[in-house]
Length: 212
Image 1 (cartoon, rainbow, N blue to C red):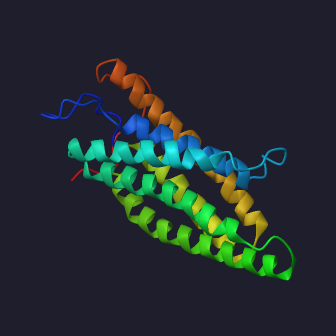
Image 2: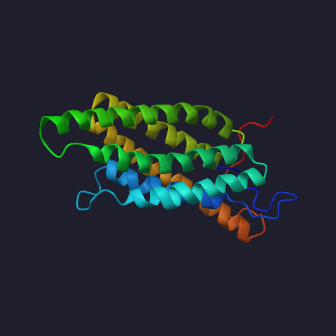
Image 3: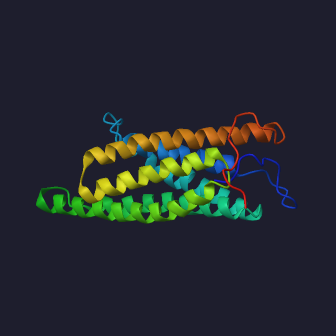
């Protein structure tokens, strides 16, 4: 989630800014899962996010992170690499752990409670990571800061809801997650437009709050 204000390729790399791809991949997968958490998918399976967590939010975002390494953008590489791996890991966890629950009865209820606690711990761990990335995002752009700020709230609400077994907190985490996706899509759109216009800003993304 690097600065999308810098659309031209970094000196000596010969590649375009990968941030718009990484942001778009993050946004779409976050939107699908958040819509499920917000209970907007009651007429669907609620698993639409799962394959895209592997292919788009996972693989595409991870690749964007690797290209950010080539652009010598440590912040973007760390952000995209981490959250790309997050989506891949979450998809694998759902398939290997969450779906292994007994089909019915008390055992299923107990296992389901343990699964929710597992997920809460996962989200808590990523919220810790996201906290210092949120701090450093103030040196990137207002749009990127907005992504990390809304994501921080989303992760805290979902983690808290998982530990407390509180469906309302999880639902609110879904709502804020949709906002997170919208902000990430906006930042991605700004980066794509800037790339088309040779680095000239089309959508306002805001500058950094602090500069070292």
